[in-house]
Length: 206
Image (cartoon, rainbow, N blue to C red; front, top):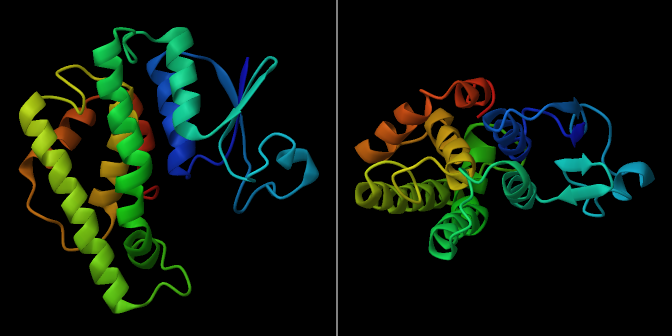
C-alpha cells in the first residue's frame, strides 16, 4: 500500500491525497511536519534531503516534490488525469509548472501575513505588493478559463486542476481584497461538485 508522509493541512500534501482519492487508490498517511513528527531528523532526511513534505513511498520507490508525486501516480493509475498524447500532456505540464513557480511566488507573503498571521510578515507594503501579484496571476487563470470554458488545461478535469484548484481555494479562503474574477469563482464552484475536492478545500485548511 502507498505511504504518504505529511500533515493534511499542507496544501502540497493535499494535492497527493486528492489525486489518490480521484484515482481510488488506497494509502496510509502518517503525520509529519509542523506540530507532528519532525522533518529534520536523519530518518526523514534519508527519504527527502530537503526536509519537506510530502513524501510518497510506493514499495521500492520513494518520491518527493508534490507535482512529481501526482504525475507519478497519474502515470501509473490515471491516464484520464494525465493524457499520454504529447500536446495534451504539455498543456497539463505547463500549468503544473506555472502553479509551482509564478503562482506560488505571488501569494507567499500575503498568505503568511493574512491567513497564517506568521511572525515577521507584517510589512504593509510587501503585503499590498503580494496581494496585487496574487490577483494578477489569478487574472491570468481567469483568462485561461475563458478560453477553455471548463478547466485549466482544456474542457476536461486534469491533473493541473488538482494543483491549481487547491491554490484557488487558498486565494478564496484568505482575507484579502479579491479581484472581481467571475471565471475563477465559477471554476471554484465546479470543483466543489467533486467530493474529493470538498474533502480538502476546508475553511480551516486554506
